[in-house]
Image 1: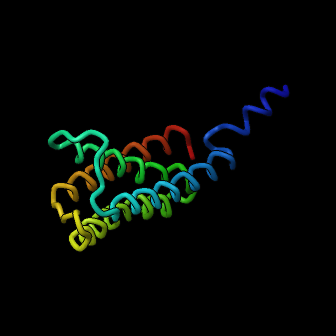
Image 2: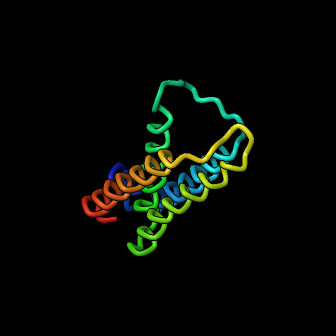
Image 3: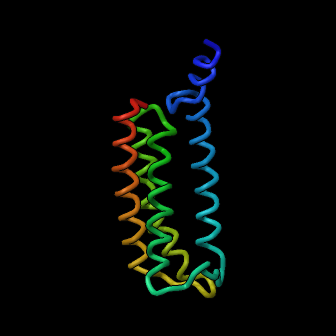
Length: 130
């Protein structure tokens, strides 16, 4: 009985997880903006095209979290799809930062990441009834 009540607090529909997802999304947004605007940022591993994988994964995460963080579907969709605009804006600003440059390929990777994250998030919302 007590275990069941304890576990109910930790379902994805619980207030705890919704708030945790909101905090994770805000912290992730801040971290991505910081990393994108840092001059001469060195990659952890530097292989051709690997930075596109980093971009895609970051934007999968940024588009997925709002689907779990917001109970209103409209808010979740707007926040997820707004990540496309964030990716474009950050790429444009990078053109003015020393050691950074604008990359259309990065915008493509960001947008594909948002698409995948949005799709995964919608599937999770449907499956988990968030």
